[in-house]
Each structure stands twice: as structure tokens, then as C-alpha cells.
Length: 461
Image (cartoon, rainbow, N blue to C red; front, side, top):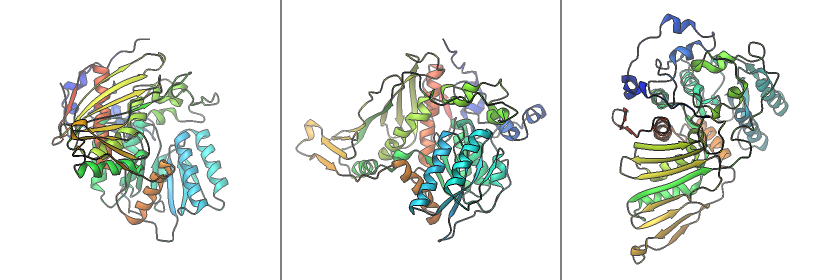
């Protein structure tokens, strides 16, 4: 099928070019048009910087009252809640409970929120079975969880269109936050989350891009700072995989799901509703452009984040991208994407993503005098031919840290105790979201986009 491109009409709206400005208050019809649970998010919406077809709406604002920051005592278990108990949220629950069982960290999962009863029940059973004696709350309404003053941190594993509202509400409620990637669906939302994080400097905020924990990227950053490769000219990376049945179709559909009976479909849709019940959208929302940027936000953020960290090249300032439907014609999002991202200092990053072929690009940073190869565990510096007499080849040996996602989770917990910033922080995540959002715009409209780091305005080239 041929999917219609985003018309771009919202790009002429001032809200598109200044997503942080004050927008008109919602109408009474907007206010009354959603369920009690989803209402606030539906009217406050995402942002004025919409991607690939969603509507620009009023700014997101907190829907919960401000709360006191609750910090764990030195010998006290960290008490955490999970918002969104699908595959990712339940996987996180198991991981944190395993930390506690192994003695890696004192942590308890004490509350779960999800509008789908069977997903929540599955996670609840796991928590009760693995945490004898620990009382676990379960609810459809995440605000009930945030209202508790005994919870230290919240892990957000809801669909992308809910990330911003959940994160802002959790920060307002005084909780430390671990937000799954991508940080938000759209750039305007990301800038609002950024504002909320900066307004709560005593709280910890982490984004779930675990490759930032791989030591080779820190080694590359230091090598660049020390001038070992000369000016970093351009870099490349990719996230490519293949499937015989279509990417994200492995998320199963439960025929027992009944909106209004065992799941709140309107609450799940939030600001992207109301719309007709569609179990494919509910289970496999990453395939649909209203709900996800697909490969860009779900896969490429993993490889872009640590590379942007290593380069320390400033904000992305210009992005152009292409997307194609090559094999998976049933998927609305593209199954092949290619991005070119330019940064403040002139550095250019080339990124490839595919769900129709698993052979990607070698991850590397090209400098004027030498190149850094990052495909393996170590940081391998090789001089350019004309600089072999000036630059020695060097392999910086990096330790095996095991499961990098576990390391990121532990980093969040350690930050909650020390109050030191987490590794995958708001500054890094904000820069990644510029690349994600502008790439999505470019793919659907056929234009390049510029971002002004001073004003945070987006303009179409």
C-alpha cells in the first residue's frame, strides 16, 4: 500500500517553530472529550513540534500535585513503581528484582500501573512470586501510584506518546525517573520534559539507552578530546536486523482483550484518540507512524546516543533523511531508513537502519589524522595514511561489563542513592530527540530541517 505523506501544513504554525512558547488554552470540547484517566493528557497533548502526521496541540502540563522528593536511606530498599507493564516493563521488573535477589542492590518493585488488566496481572504475579512479603499495588490509573509518598523512583515503559506526560507527572510528584527510549515521541514534548527536569534539579532522570554504558565510547570521547585523531570530521553507525514475518509482529495479540471490559482503550490512546479499537495498533504500535517513529526512535537511538556522547559535537543543527517501504509493505513506518545529521561544530553523522537486512555499517569516527573503529569491544585508533609518522596505531582495551542494560539500570539506582547525575541524562537525550524528530519529519515531507540551539526553533529548509 501507499501511505500518505505528512502534509507539512503544521510547519507554518508558530507552534512548529517555537515548541516552548505558550499555546492557547484548550477548549471545553477538548477538555470533555476524553475519559477521566486520559483526559488531561488528551487536552494537554504532545507539543507544537509534531512528527509524521500527529496534530500539534496544547502544551503538556502536570496532572498531579507537586510532591516532596523521597530519597532512600543508606540501608533502605529503593522502592520503585513501573508505569507500563507490557513486555519491556515486565522485563524491567524481573531485572530489578533479580538485582535484589543477587544482592547487587536493595530494590523492591512495589507498584504497577497499566490500562490493560492482563498485562498488569502478569507482571503483578511475577512481582508477588519473586518478592515474598512485599506488598505490590496494581492499578489502571498511574496517578494513584504517583500520589504515594513512599515510592522513590518510577520506571516509565509506556508507549512513546505517553512518555512525556508520565515523566512530567512523575517529576512533579517528587519521583526519580527512568524513562524508556525514545525519551518522547516528538521534539516539542522532549523540550517540555527537558524544562521539567531542569526545574527539578534535585531529582534523577535517566533515559533507557543502555549502550551509553559501553566503555569504548568513553574511551573514544577521551581520545578525541586529547586530539589523537585531529578534528572529528564525520562518523557512521547503524542498527539493522531482519525478519521473515515483519518487525514487531512478534508482539502477540490476545483475543480476550475487550475495551471497556479488561482494558481502557481510550486511556491508552490518550491524546492520539479517540479512535476505533485496533488490537494490532495496541500490540504493535511501533509499526504505526502516529504512535512511533519506528526504526528511528526504537532502534537507532541506541547507537546514536553513545556516538553523540563520544563526539561531544554540540546540538544537531541540520537533518535530512529518507525512508522506504521495501519488503514489509504492511508496516506503515519504513523498513529502510537513512539519516544524515550535522552538528554545531560541523561534524556529520551518517546513520542507517533496516528491518529488512541485518548487515549494517561499521561503527566508526573519522578524524583528519586518524579513525576510531568501534565495532568490537575496544577502541581501535588507526592513523590516516598521510599521518602514519605522526600518529601511532593504538588499541584502547575496554573491559567486558556484561549486560549493558543491567549496567544502566544499576547506574540509575546508584544515582538515586548518591544523587549524582545518571549516565543517559536529559542533555544527551534532548540532542538525540532533535535528530529523531527532524529525521522523521524529513522522511515524511521530503524536506531537510534545521534546529537552532539557542532558540530551540525548527525550520524547514
